[in-house]
Image (cartoon, rainbow, N blue to C red; front, top):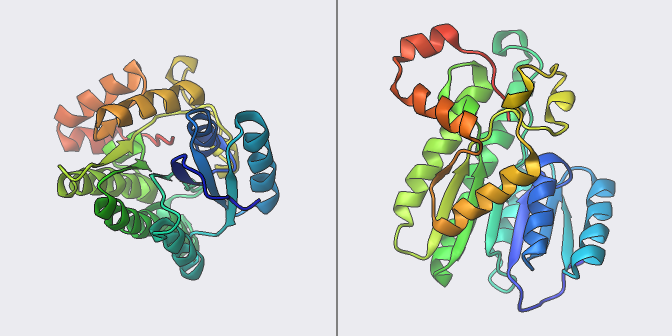
Length: 258
């Protein structure tokens, strides 16, 4: 459906059709935000839009886009930058994991993932940062991962970039009324692992509930926190990873995905 102009704030969520992105859409709608829902699957997006409209009485706009396609990404960036229909909250959530290690994977597959995990975050954050700074308000949430604190393949490297990029952008926007938060979850009970073809690793206590994860993140956004690590277990893990020698991190690195 097409979003109509209202006095409510608007949030744009990428990767909104499932998992953490879907939960962000629900919780932002519950906060009385209109939504712009971005993902590749039109059917899932339209069902979600109808559900949000019915349940929360908000407007939900569907924007179908494969963010690895530069033309499609630019369409989303143009929507973020639209002065007549301002986006007050941007959630860069789209992403996926790789079933194979870097050197065993096709380069084209790696490049597509790189575009979604990093280039899309760069392009959309630029569009949002410029537009929001002009208005003097707004929030950017970039979904990173605890994987960014370890050394395990291209996914880990991409998420390390997202976290560091978000910290730098938050510094650039300090005092402007615009906040930037990097969300760094660990294992989360969504369909992410299944879609990546990865068996569910680790003990149960390591797994996060997406509803609480998103609620904790939005609380951190409200407080202006730059790096949001949900769950006491992952706060402890990240704290340890920040101080142990990198040689030890590399030697013990295990694949950790959100």
